[in-house]
Length: 256
Image (tube, rainbow, N blue to C red; front, side):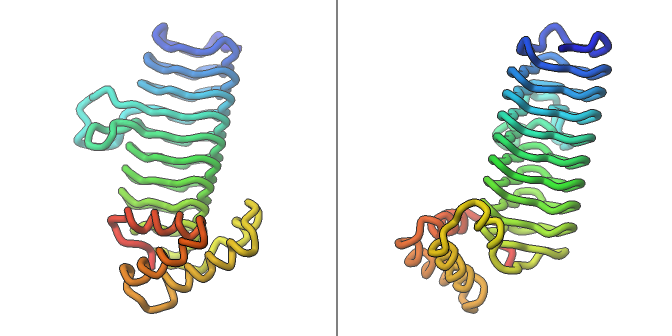
Protein backbone atom coordinates (compact mmCIF):
# COMPACT_ATOMS: atom_id res chain seq x y z
CA UNK A 1 0.00 0.00 0.00
CA UNK A 2 3.05 2.30 0.34
CA UNK A 3 4.94 3.08 -2.84
CA UNK A 4 8.66 2.39 -2.59
CA UNK A 5 9.40 5.92 -3.82
CA UNK A 6 7.53 7.59 -0.94
CA UNK A 7 9.55 9.07 1.94
CA UNK A 8 8.09 8.35 5.38
CA UNK A 9 9.76 9.40 8.60
CA UNK A 10 10.25 6.58 11.15
CA UNK A 11 8.34 8.67 13.70
CA UNK A 12 5.21 8.78 11.55
CA UNK A 13 2.40 6.37 12.52
CA UNK A 14 0.35 4.93 9.66
CA UNK A 15 -2.37 2.29 9.90
CA UNK A 16 -1.59 -0.90 8.02
CA UNK A 17 -3.99 -0.21 5.16
CA UNK A 18 -3.05 3.43 4.49
CA UNK A 19 -2.15 3.98 0.83
CA UNK A 20 0.74 6.32 0.00
CA UNK A 21 1.58 7.26 -3.59
CA UNK A 22 4.98 7.79 -5.19
CA UNK A 23 7.13 10.72 -4.09
CA UNK A 24 4.83 11.59 -1.18
CA UNK A 25 6.70 12.89 1.87
CA UNK A 26 5.36 12.23 5.37
CA UNK A 27 7.23 13.81 8.26
CA UNK A 28 7.56 12.95 11.94
CA UNK A 29 4.66 13.25 14.40
CA UNK A 30 2.09 12.45 11.71
CA UNK A 31 -0.66 9.94 12.51
CA UNK A 32 -2.87 8.56 9.72
CA UNK A 33 -5.76 6.19 10.45
CA UNK A 34 -7.20 3.27 8.53
CA UNK A 35 -8.50 3.59 4.99
CA UNK A 36 -6.90 6.92 4.16
CA UNK A 37 -5.26 7.42 0.77
CA UNK A 38 -2.33 9.81 0.29
CA UNK A 39 -1.75 10.79 -3.32
CA UNK A 40 1.58 11.17 -5.12
CA UNK A 41 3.79 14.17 -4.34
CA UNK A 42 1.71 15.06 -1.28
CA UNK A 43 3.66 16.54 1.65
CA UNK A 44 2.36 16.04 5.21
CA UNK A 45 4.16 17.54 8.19
CA UNK A 46 3.27 17.41 11.86
CA UNK A 47 2.19 17.37 14.50
CA UNK A 48 -0.79 16.25 12.40
CA UNK A 49 -3.49 13.66 12.96
CA UNK A 50 -5.56 12.45 10.00
CA UNK A 51 -8.55 10.19 10.63
CA UNK A 52 -10.14 7.34 8.69
CA UNK A 53 -11.10 7.04 5.03
CA UNK A 54 -9.77 10.39 3.84
CA UNK A 55 -8.70 10.87 0.23
CA UNK A 56 -5.87 13.39 -0.20
CA UNK A 57 -4.94 14.07 -3.82
CA UNK A 58 -1.61 14.84 -5.41
CA UNK A 59 0.49 17.89 -4.56
CA UNK A 60 -1.46 18.80 -1.43
CA UNK A 61 0.52 20.40 1.40
CA UNK A 62 -0.94 19.37 4.74
CA UNK A 63 0.17 20.32 8.25
CA UNK A 64 3.02 22.65 7.44
CA UNK A 65 4.03 25.74 9.42
CA UNK A 66 1.49 28.58 9.68
CA UNK A 67 2.01 31.60 7.44
CA UNK A 68 2.29 33.92 10.42
CA UNK A 69 5.35 36.04 11.21
CA UNK A 70 4.68 35.54 14.92
CA UNK A 71 5.23 31.80 14.57
CA UNK A 72 8.52 30.76 16.19
CA UNK A 73 8.47 27.01 15.70
CA UNK A 74 6.09 26.10 18.52
CA UNK A 75 4.65 22.54 18.35
CA UNK A 76 1.15 23.45 17.18
CA UNK A 77 -0.99 20.89 15.38
CA UNK A 78 -3.50 20.01 12.69
CA UNK A 79 -6.42 17.64 13.23
CA UNK A 80 -8.44 16.19 10.33
CA UNK A 81 -11.43 13.92 10.94
CA UNK A 82 -12.91 11.13 8.80
CA UNK A 83 -14.19 10.83 5.26
CA UNK A 84 -12.80 14.06 3.85
CA UNK A 85 -11.85 14.64 0.22
CA UNK A 86 -8.91 17.02 -0.17
CA UNK A 87 -8.16 17.71 -3.81
CA UNK A 88 -5.08 18.76 -5.78
CA UNK A 89 -2.76 21.47 -4.46
CA UNK A 90 -4.78 22.22 -1.32
CA UNK A 91 -2.76 23.86 1.47
CA UNK A 92 -3.71 23.40 5.13
CA UNK A 93 -1.55 24.95 7.86
CA UNK A 94 -1.20 24.10 11.55
CA UNK A 95 -2.36 26.45 14.32
CA UNK A 96 -0.54 29.10 16.35
CA UNK A 97 -0.14 29.68 20.07
CA UNK A 98 -1.90 33.03 19.63
CA UNK A 99 -5.08 30.95 19.32
CA UNK A 100 -5.79 27.43 20.60
CA UNK A 101 -2.75 26.05 18.78
CA UNK A 102 -4.75 23.86 16.42
CA UNK A 103 -6.29 23.95 12.97
CA UNK A 104 -9.21 21.50 12.88
CA UNK A 105 -11.26 19.98 10.05
CA UNK A 106 -14.20 17.73 10.89
CA UNK A 107 -15.81 14.91 8.88
CA UNK A 108 -17.13 14.43 5.34
CA UNK A 109 -15.90 17.72 3.92
CA UNK A 110 -15.25 18.28 0.21
CA UNK A 111 -12.26 20.59 -0.22
CA UNK A 112 -11.60 21.28 -3.88
CA UNK A 113 -8.40 22.11 -5.75
CA UNK A 114 -6.19 25.03 -4.69
CA UNK A 115 -8.16 25.79 -1.53
CA UNK A 116 -6.12 27.37 1.28
CA UNK A 117 -7.01 26.77 4.93
CA UNK A 118 -4.86 29.02 7.10
CA UNK A 119 -3.70 28.61 10.68
CA UNK A 120 -6.24 28.20 13.48
CA UNK A 121 -9.23 27.69 11.18
CA UNK A 122 -11.99 25.44 12.47
CA UNK A 123 -14.13 23.70 9.83
CA UNK A 124 -17.11 21.60 10.86
CA UNK A 125 -18.73 18.72 8.98
CA UNK A 126 -20.30 18.26 5.52
CA UNK A 127 -18.94 21.50 4.08
CA UNK A 128 -17.98 22.23 0.47
CA UNK A 129 -15.11 24.60 -0.27
CA UNK A 130 -15.00 25.11 -4.04
CA UNK A 131 -11.84 25.70 -6.07
CA UNK A 132 -9.50 28.51 -5.00
CA UNK A 133 -11.44 29.40 -1.85
CA UNK A 134 -9.08 30.96 0.69
CA UNK A 135 -9.64 31.13 4.43
CA UNK A 136 -7.44 33.55 6.38
CA UNK A 137 -6.37 32.72 9.92
CA UNK A 138 -8.80 32.02 12.77
CA UNK A 139 -11.85 31.55 10.51
CA UNK A 140 -14.76 29.41 11.75
CA UNK A 141 -16.86 27.45 9.24
CA UNK A 142 -19.85 25.63 10.69
CA UNK A 143 -21.60 22.50 9.37
CA UNK A 144 -23.05 22.31 5.84
CA UNK A 145 -21.56 25.60 4.69
CA UNK A 146 -20.94 25.90 0.93
CA UNK A 147 -18.32 28.38 -0.27
CA UNK A 148 -18.35 29.14 -3.98
CA UNK A 149 -15.16 29.18 -6.01
CA UNK A 150 -12.70 32.00 -5.33
CA UNK A 151 -14.47 32.99 -2.11
CA UNK A 152 -12.10 34.97 0.14
CA UNK A 153 -12.73 35.03 3.89
CA UNK A 154 -11.06 37.61 6.15
CA UNK A 155 -9.38 36.52 9.35
CA UNK A 156 -11.56 35.90 12.44
CA UNK A 157 -14.78 35.71 10.42
CA UNK A 158 -17.39 33.06 11.22
CA UNK A 159 -19.74 31.43 8.73
CA UNK A 160 -22.89 29.97 10.22
CA UNK A 161 -24.35 26.56 9.50
CA UNK A 162 -26.01 26.07 6.09
CA UNK A 163 -24.92 29.45 4.73
CA UNK A 164 -23.89 29.80 1.09
CA UNK A 165 -21.51 32.14 -0.72
CA UNK A 166 -21.55 32.77 -4.46
CA UNK A 167 -18.34 32.57 -6.48
CA UNK A 168 -15.81 35.37 -5.95
CA UNK A 169 -17.47 36.54 -2.74
CA UNK A 170 -15.41 38.66 -0.38
CA UNK A 171 -16.32 37.97 3.26
CA UNK A 172 -15.18 40.60 5.76
CA UNK A 173 -17.89 40.09 8.41
CA UNK A 174 -19.71 37.11 9.90
CA UNK A 175 -22.34 35.35 7.79
CA UNK A 176 -25.35 34.17 9.83
CA UNK A 177 -26.67 30.61 9.49
CA UNK A 178 -28.88 29.80 6.48
CA UNK A 179 -28.10 33.04 4.62
CA UNK A 180 -26.90 33.36 1.00
CA UNK A 181 -24.38 36.10 0.22
CA UNK A 182 -22.54 37.29 -2.86
CA UNK A 183 -20.39 40.13 -4.08
CA UNK A 184 -17.20 41.88 -3.06
CA UNK A 185 -17.77 42.86 -0.36
CA UNK A 186 -20.53 40.32 0.22
CA UNK A 187 -24.17 41.33 0.66
CA UNK A 188 -27.12 39.15 1.77
CA UNK A 189 -29.43 37.71 -0.89
CA UNK A 190 -32.04 35.71 0.98
CA UNK A 191 -32.06 32.27 2.55
CA UNK A 192 -30.25 29.20 1.19
CA UNK A 193 -33.70 27.72 0.58
CA UNK A 194 -32.77 25.05 -1.94
CA UNK A 195 -29.95 23.77 0.25
CA UNK A 196 -32.25 23.60 3.26
CA UNK A 197 -34.88 21.69 1.29
CA UNK A 198 -32.27 19.15 0.18
CA UNK A 199 -31.31 18.61 3.81
CA UNK A 200 -34.87 17.87 4.88
CA UNK A 201 -36.00 21.12 6.50
CA UNK A 202 -39.77 21.11 6.80
CA UNK A 203 -42.07 23.70 5.21
CA UNK A 204 -42.87 24.99 8.68
CA UNK A 205 -39.18 25.43 9.54
CA UNK A 206 -38.55 27.22 6.26
CA UNK A 207 -41.43 29.59 6.92
CA UNK A 208 -40.06 30.37 10.38
CA UNK A 209 -36.60 31.00 8.98
CA UNK A 210 -38.00 33.29 6.28
CA UNK A 211 -39.69 35.33 8.99
CA UNK A 212 -36.42 35.44 10.92
CA UNK A 213 -34.61 36.64 7.79
CA UNK A 214 -37.16 39.44 7.34
CA UNK A 215 -36.68 40.47 10.95
CA UNK A 216 -32.91 40.56 10.60
CA UNK A 217 -32.61 42.14 7.15
CA UNK A 218 -35.84 43.88 6.13
CA UNK A 219 -37.33 45.31 9.31
CA UNK A 220 -34.92 48.29 9.46
CA UNK A 221 -34.24 47.39 13.09
CA UNK A 222 -30.82 47.70 14.65
CA UNK A 223 -29.02 44.42 15.09
CA UNK A 224 -29.70 44.41 18.81
CA UNK A 225 -33.40 45.16 18.38
CA UNK A 226 -33.71 42.51 15.68
CA UNK A 227 -31.99 40.04 17.99
CA UNK A 228 -34.57 40.72 20.70
CA UNK A 229 -37.37 39.84 18.28
CA UNK A 230 -35.52 36.76 17.08
CA UNK A 231 -35.23 35.49 20.65
CA UNK A 232 -39.02 35.57 20.85
CA UNK A 233 -39.36 33.72 17.52
CA UNK A 234 -36.82 31.14 18.66
CA UNK A 235 -39.18 29.98 21.40
CA UNK A 236 -41.18 28.19 18.69
CA UNK A 237 -38.30 27.30 16.36
CA UNK A 238 -35.06 25.48 17.22
CA UNK A 239 -33.76 26.51 13.79
CA UNK A 240 -34.20 30.18 14.61
CA UNK A 241 -32.53 29.41 17.92
CA UNK A 242 -29.41 28.40 15.97
CA UNK A 243 -29.39 31.82 14.33
CA UNK A 244 -29.85 33.56 17.68
CA UNK A 245 -26.98 31.64 19.28
CA UNK A 246 -24.72 32.60 16.37
CA UNK A 247 -25.64 36.29 16.54
CA UNK A 248 -25.14 36.42 20.29
CA UNK A 249 -21.49 35.40 19.97
CA UNK A 250 -20.50 37.40 16.86
CA UNK A 251 -17.86 40.06 17.42
CA UNK A 252 -17.09 41.43 13.93
CA UNK A 253 -20.58 42.47 12.92
CA UNK A 254 -22.54 40.56 10.29
CA UNK A 255 -22.93 40.81 6.53
CA UNK A 256 -25.91 43.13 6.38
